[in-house]
Image 1 (cartoon, one colour):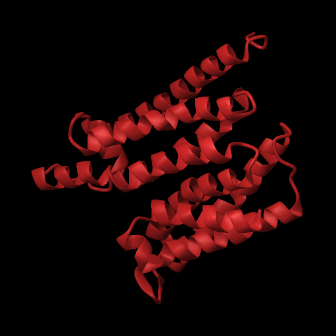
Image 2: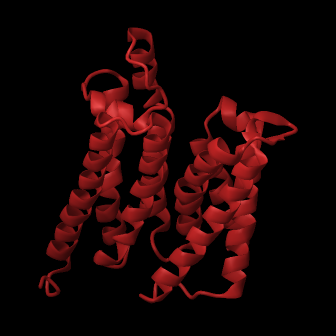
Image 3: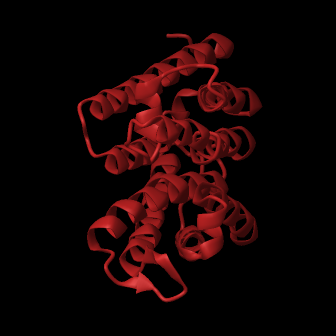
Length: 249
């Protein structure tokens, strides 16, 4: 309908993208209120937001303007996390849906809010920068978001359920969780490669798929290291995906 005016088209795409993402966030806020397991709810947010956001990239025009317009949605979320994390904006349901603490004591409520300045903020930064800098024509954006969202999210869910056997060098991580992370990140990357190739944004190939496998394996390994626990795996997984992706793609 707005094909004759790409600026208007991008604005409409940005509004549609924001509506979908914030509706999805509202859904997870409601499940948190209804008592869905705190850790599971948090990981469902982690998995779904970035992947659903990336599904909407074909709505935007090609080039720098389309990338910046698309990046506005997660970009707004950066400021949202800052306001929540600094205690300027009060939204208990959002804090519950994105933090790992389920207790309502004053001390743990404080930890929940401060936690938003780490993992969730790194998450929003990753998705925003991957979109604005690499955009849909780069496999680096696919690798970074898929390993962060699908890989890291599935790792935690599988690890908690089947992770009895721990990794020798890190008792906080399980073998099952690391395997699940590598597989989920790789499969999501390949699916998005095919998705973007159908629009002509990338050219799918076995070489690109092999690159995704290398990045997913490396991301899973780095996530399993003690340093990822001390820093934040949202940060270490992202850096690994971008740095290695820059070498293999």
